[in-house]
Image (cartoon, rainbow, N blue to C red; front, side):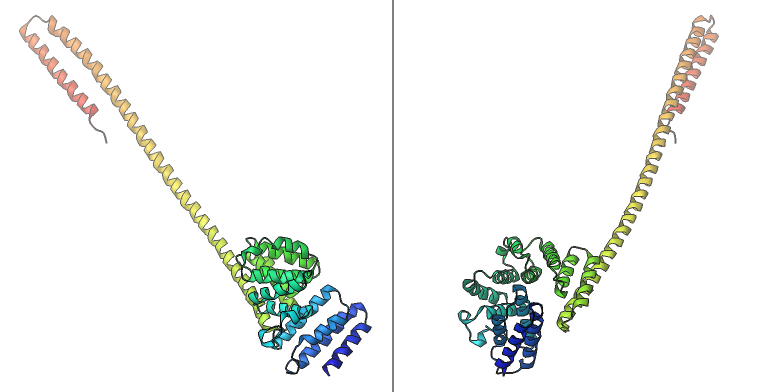
Amino acid sequence: ALVVEVDELTDRALAASSLARFTIVKAGLYDLVDRRAKDTSLQAWTDPLEHVLTCVPLDEQAQQRLLQTITWRARTHGLGDPLGEETGRAFADAGKWVLYCSAYFRRFEFKFQELHHLTHHALAAHPDEVMFEVFSAFGALGVNDATIAEEVPALFERVKSNPAALDTLLHGVWLSTDVLEDRDEWVLTISRQSMRLGDRSANVYFWRSSALRATGRYAEALESIDEALARHTLRDNHVHQDYVRERELIRAMQSIARMVALSAEEATRELNELHRRQLAEAQAEFRAKALAVEDSVSKSLTGVVEILGVFLALLGFLAGTGYLVLNVDHFWSSLAAFGVLALGSLAFIVALRLIVRPRA
């Protein structure tokens, strides 16, 4: 019955126009996976997909979109890795489409080491498939392999016209932490290129919002995550919760940044006020000291002038009394003259003492 259904699906797709083939194949394979997800007779869920991709001509981008979406669908139904250890299937026995399904499955499961192991064998069998190189880079980025940092720019240039490859590369760069110094700028660059090619999926906006948040562009990040939430149509609650958590994180960082800005403004105002007060106090202290120095100099000059005046008066007094003493003829007159000289000298000494005494 399964073979008949797959053959009928293949015939419908071949009879349709090239534009309608992808939609017919995707809907038919979704139906097969959904109805037979719990059917133990479906040992290899990739068999119908492999048959259709082999028989129905689709362009590379349509093939990769189909591989990615059907693998995700199978995973949500609990179906396992088509090349997992429990299947007993060897890489050498697997065709290209099965290898791709396994690579997507390991990408979705974040099994980076296993993905690297798979791509090593896949590239040996299919060296011209650039998508396997991208999957290899995804595994290296996931385990923070520093050697991949130098390869990312060149790989981006090779696949920048390939939306499926950009999607996987963007996811890997977003997951990396210590590999790329400008990791957030690379996320923005790759996501921008993906959008130019028409890939405006919810995940692209989600990964982009994370990079915008990390670079402090919170308003743009909020717009991007809201767009991701609006475009999320898979009804996957876990994915939706990831988007919601990112949005809450953006809002929290936005609030913190606003509080830091307000605190910085308040601190600046306080520092300016403190500086103003200190400057005013310093100016007041300087003026007080200047006045004190000015007063001290003024008083000193006054004292010098007073001392000079007293000294000149003393010279005049000594000259006058000396002349008087020398020119009197009587004893008592001479004695009186000497008395006047002594008292005058004492008076000048007292006056000088009063002038040079400390002043308040």
